[in-house]
Amino acid sequence: MSQYFPEGLVDEALSVMRCESLGDPLAYNSSSGASGLFQFIPGTWGWASPNAGFSGASPFDPEANVGTAAWLVQESIDDGKDAWVHWSCKP
Image (cartoon, rainbow, N blue to C red; front, side):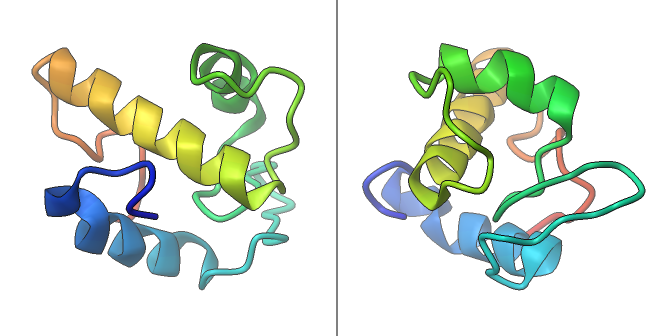
């Protein structure tokens, strides 16, 4: 986790991940299609993962899921938004 998230956000990221998927990289929500550790919905995964450098990766790939989440958090911060604006679970 610390490979992708800055030190000050690692605990928050772990908290969000636990809430979203209970830490299960194969978690899947049949209602929304949310998938993986950070429960990306297909539309968000479709544009965020390539921008994060994980083009073609599955949301069930733990490294791609964490890396994409970290990229999306940094994008939110850079845009002046709450780091966790894209998630239902908050730290």
